[in-house]
Image (tube, rainbow, N blue to C red):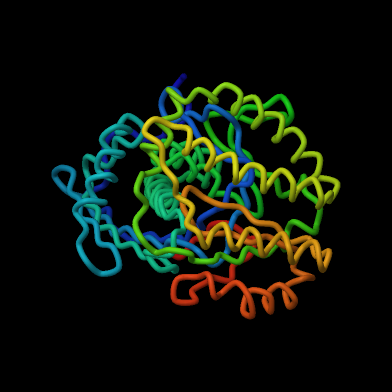
Length: 356
């Protein structure tokens, strides 16, 4: 791929008095059609669609100043974190052709999440997209150019695949598909203007079944798809689901939306159970919540559905108009299946926000 993201305005020298601070808040997201399986350099084997969340976010600040060479420190919630800092340093090293100015800067990164570390929320999407937007903000101030969210999605994808979707409000599509013009494996595209108003105010109540660390990382899980006997069928099914979900999102077809969303969640976990080695990430209470959600939906006809990430915790999705009834259902029935009664009330959000 041609290096279209290299800034031609950067002349190779950072001013001697160059210093400052930038800050961005970026949300996590929850995939409806799941991305599971990679190819090439952080490219998806199938397209995915996600809701952008509102309350589950990472706030990142970067203090920068001119230096004789590259310098870097990373702090997470007030404590120096060399392990995660090493991941970010590797990302910067691997992409220094795009950001040559960093070799003349010392960066002090401070990051915090608005959600508990053990809540099972995918923090790589929010943390890496927040970091990338701060980095692009520094570049823009050096070369005096405007912020490019497509560029932010491209580099967020290189840092963490699902982070590509977090840079847009409401909903995003990542991955090339004939069903959506302009879609790409290289970056996500926004769907906000192509969805029915009902989806723009959707709620996501996240039920914390377990706060334990997952037995397999998402990175390892993606790699296991290479030998999964159902991989090709899965990719074909995901492409078909993308096509049908895009139509449902535009028309406001809640029945199709629920069928695809729940099927995708269960397929994700079925794929992990069929990998070698295999993993079962759902817990008994995950299954109990699924049973209770289906019972509640059948009895009340309220369009409540579930999805799952690569872990045991359940995301309950429903229109804002049903929030009071669903909240009562959660408090009166489902909290008994949650770790210490923990849950997070979230909703579809407006995307990243510049803080400084």
